[in-house]
Length: 95
Image (cartoon, rainbow, N blue to C red; front, side, top):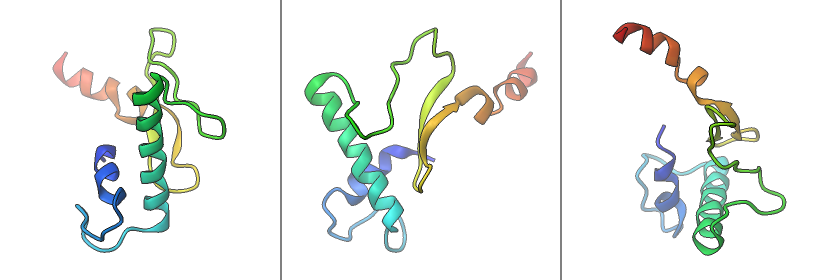
């Protein structure tokens, strides 16, 4: 799922959305969090703030661990991107 669509989706709360149907409370909270991460990053160069799930800088040491941004109570959490997207399987198809 493309997380970028959550930013303009709920930013103005006008009801004009990219999704069919009304936004859920979890989707609105996720939108607010994403807007917060992006705003803090644009202002300070660091998306993190006290009280929010830490967004680790991508480095060789972090490997394929990234921050998942999904609606719901545990939707913002670190995940192993390679495992989540079955990287080994897809890589085996191309040799």
